[in-house]
Image (cartoon, rainbow, N blue to C red; front, side, top):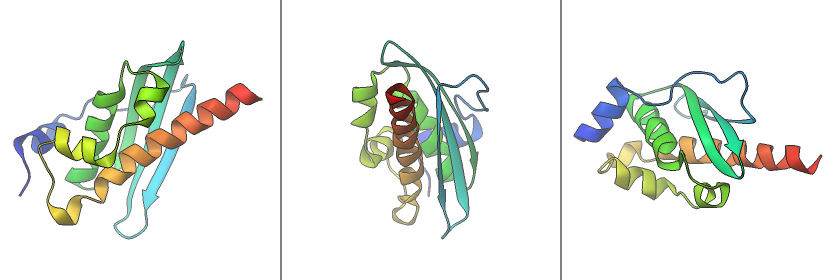
Length: 123
């Protein structure tokens, strides 16, 4: 059902935990399945220097959140905003059709975190 990469990121998720000194946070939830996700980012010179997440959800939600953090760490904000749900799915070597909606959480929470960061700069 799941690829080796999905199982690896589920069993050993990368970049987990809260980040008390984060520059911004993005939160997302999926009321249909009950999954929820918080992503925290630390930005330096427009580069995501550090990123972490806390997730409550199924194996696919945790794996896609973990992979999302791996894909954007060290990227500029502009590059990170270009990451798509399909990029996450491809990086995990695929997801079962009924679990593809899980990839939306990570990307959506990331975009919210970046948006929240940009709003702080405008203040």
